[in-house]
Image 1: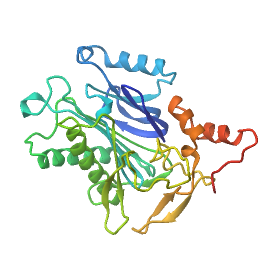
Image 2: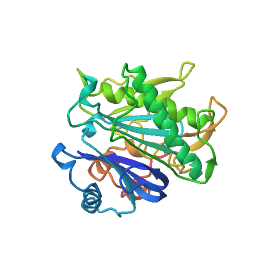
Image 3: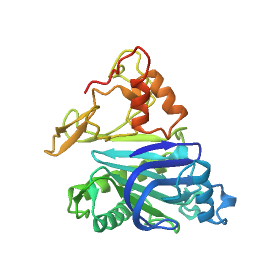
Image 4: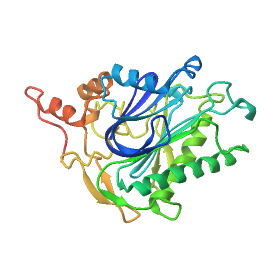
Length: 303
C-alpha cells in the first residue's frame, strides 16, 4: 500500500480486497481507494461522475472505491497500530453546537497489511462503526454518527484473519485506531487546529503502548537514519512494504511479527524524497530503480 495526499484528495494505491459502504460500494478487488473533498455546492452533483472525473484527472483506473466529504484534507488524521492504518476525516452536524452546516460527515478507511477474509472485512466495518459511536460518546456527544458517514475496510496479502470482531486482536487494533482517529480529527477543526494532516503511531518504547504524534519541528531524534536525511516521510507511506531488500520481519513485544525497516534510508535520501514529493503516485519499485541508477553511486539502503 502506498498512500499520498493532494490538496483535496487522499489516495491509497495497492492491490486491495476491500469492502465499502460508500458510493458504488460493495465487496471486491480494487487498485485505488480515495477520500475526496468536495465543496458544499458540489454535494448535490453526481458523486459517481465526480469519482470518474477525479480518477481520470489522476490518470488512474476506475477500478476503485471512494468516499466524499466536505472536510478539508488538511484535517485528515492518520493512525497506525502495527499492521493496521486508519484514515479519518470528521465533521459534525450543526445541531451538535460544534459542527458546520456543510462539512458534517465522518469518513473512515481501515487498512490492514495482513489479509482479511471477506467476512472479516465486513466485521471490520461493524467494529469501526461501533468504535466511532464510542469515540463520539467519549467526546461528549449524544449522536452515534451523521447521516452521510461511510466506511471502507481493505487489506492486502493472503488471508490471515477470518474474524475481526471485538474479541480479536485485529479488531481491538481497529477499535483503538478509530477511537484515536475520530477524537484527533474532531480536534483538528477546533481552536488552534493544525494546518496539515496529523499522524499518530502506537509506540511501545518505554513500556506499555502509548500514542505518539509525529511532528517535523524540533524532532529530538534527528538524524535517526543518516546525516543530512530528509524527514518529509518520517513514517514511510509504503509501510509495511515487506520488501526484504529494505527491511525484515522481527518478533514484536506482543509476540507477533512486526515489519522492521529502521535501517532503510530510501525515502530519506534527499533526491528520492524530492522526487516522491513531486510524484506522490510513484511506486516503491520506481523509487528503488531511480536510486540504483544514480550514476556513480551505490544504494544506501542496508538489507
